[in-house]
Image (cartoon, rainbow, N blue to C red):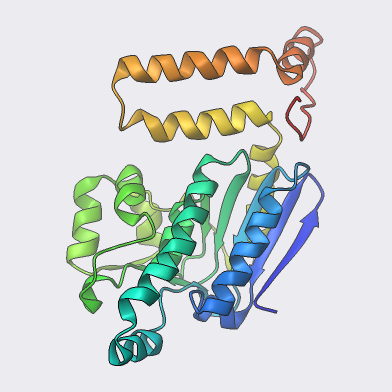
Length: 265
């Protein structure tokens, strides 16, 4: 099975790519398995957060070089790349706009579109020995997987440009130093720590999670006036929910809030 999933306590789903899927994530069968697994989880109202990790030496790689070569030889390469990005890019967009919290547990090397998958997550926990690469320039390609939008927001435009133009490979330590990942932990506690973050971030209300993700993403590409209007519309909507009523009650009663997993009807 290319991808497995387990629903754990706290409304956390653990998604694990097999060694084969980690090493060849964008082979059609592996990508389809990843998509179907994540879309099913995203449709589960009881799921609050998702941890994605790989197996073996890799977290998630980019496109398969042999597949690229055969596509070039057959003249089908454009159609194949179009099909791959037609599948990957809507997934990344769903991740960025979903109320689910996505945590990537980067267990090994990551490249190309696999790096885009990690960048599209809300939090990245990484092992020191991981290798993070773009690989696009080495192949004569421009980036995909949202890298040119996501990476500059983490590390700055010029650092992202150097990473791409120099075809750099970052270690886990380097990625942590410049802000491409959020935490560096030993492999023995990688999944455990990622699940902790997922539970902690997933405990908040649906409106807080989704609204904050959308507002932060919009903040760097809209005028201040537009951002204020966006904030207002989401604030008014969330103030009418049972989660807000629970938040006010818990504050007055000096206890931790207990937010529901599902949205109000």
